[in-house]
Image 1 (cartoon, rainbow, N blue to C red):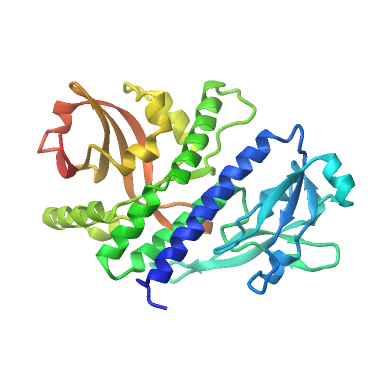
Image 2 (cartoon, rainbow, N blue to C red):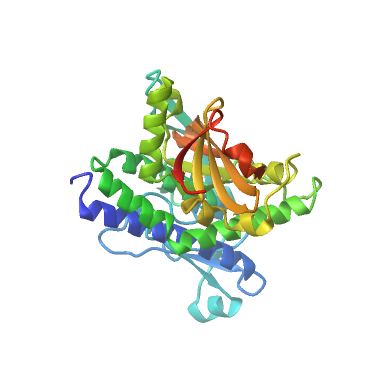
Length: 350
């Protein structure tokens, strides 16, 4: 299979769309647990279904059973499984049995990849499910968490695949399709609304804000990546430390940090629309002394709402990924951003 084949691009897009759909479905099902408290694992059950996923087909657990933190789909690249939510009447009519999966979860050590700088084999703690008959259902590495984490792992895998495409036109095509997919933006808006609600509840909020609840925001467009590479070369900087991993992410704790930052803050509407606005920014700047990207989101008179992105950061080893991290957001004077000694414009118009 060619890395740049039409089949591969369609497959990346199709699976990405299915993943975003499952994450949105998870949140809708959570909102309905008062009436539909039982969830059933649904596998496709054709000749392409993985045997380990087949093991869970049609099993029913309560929505709050800890097993869902491990097995809620997707459970790996190309997983087509889904979850159906049920009422007590559904259970009675279909003769379904509710099982308790809390004691089925076990943590094992698995190889997650190789650190290409040191040659070290990366080993991680990995969650899997051992059924009463001794058979094991093990999600792929990095997918053994809640759907939000699974979506992140999936996007990290896509970013690696995009980097392997040889043709810049093909890379630009697939990145544009992903960044402009409405399902992704709806999912991000829902995630951001929940994170802002947790922040509004204050530091004593029992739900808490998790530093491990990562959310994909944007695949860096091909044009931005190429112009950044040119700017780095002109500046004589070390490209290994600066050039991007192509995936911009953030976590819940950063939302709390941004919302309490000393700088004037962006509007809530802009928070909720970050993924849309970063996909179509007014401008993208390279902050020369700090080696960071500044995404200009909106301009209102002499002020601009911006998002600051750090480059080439290694997150959890279990994800074995290099990404860009959205560090903060705030309001800046347009005149400050037009300082050519501090910023170089990579893209956009003022």
